[in-house]
Image (cartoon, rainbow, N blue to C red; front, top):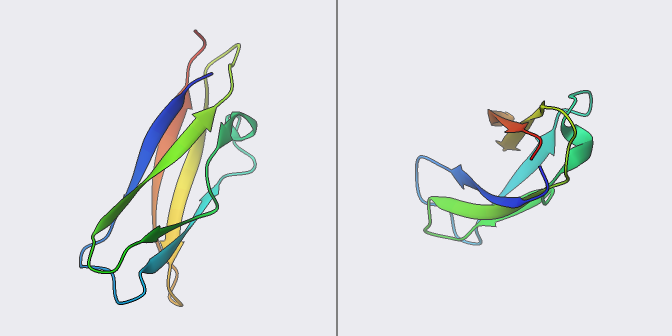
Length: 88
């Protein structure tokens, strides 16, 4: 904890005209959630298949983790990853 890192959202085909807005969320009940911040949405530009975003973390005194979920569309297509923070 206490540093920044880069997250990335990938999709399986190029984003449509106007781009594709991806919603990002974290598990509010996870031990690491209070220590992790990132934007609520990222937009993958038209014709692109991915978009990076910055994840900032706060220092922690013990190892904690949270799940980051990316979702989009009316059918709520989702993907998740776990971010673990360790004390320095």
